[in-house]
Amino acid sequence: MSLFLMMTPEGAGEEGAPAPEKVLAGDPRFRTWNLEERDGLYAGVWESTPGKWAISYDEWEYCRILSGRSVITSEDGEAVEVGPGDGFVLRPGFRGTWEVVETTRKEYVIRV
Image 1 (cartoon, rainbow, N blue to C red):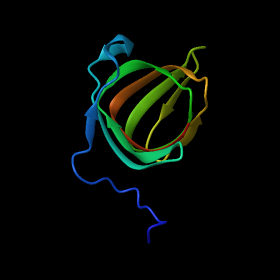
Image 2 (cartoon, rainbow, N blue to C red):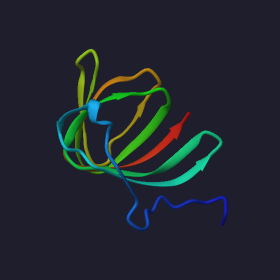
Image 3 (spheres, rainbow, N blue to C red):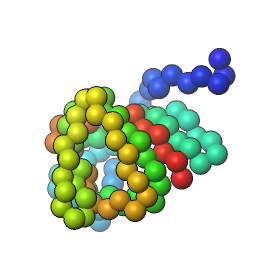
């Protein structure tokens, strides 16, 4: 079924981290399994260890938290805690911080 994609990560994934100048607390480390990449659309699974960093979105991102806890705070100070089962959209222009309180894993779909 070439037009059907299970969102199941395999292997070790790609390691990463926020740019050092964006880190505000801790030493967050990422692992990403990008499962789809075509026509400006990206989909996969992302995981981060605890820490806090500045975020700035130029694209649309839909997320569903699979495990862990994070706090997303907009630049105006509004904070939302997200955990397993929570789904949300970050729209282009969103600025603020992402704080991983407990190692967090999410599914994502990004449209640039």
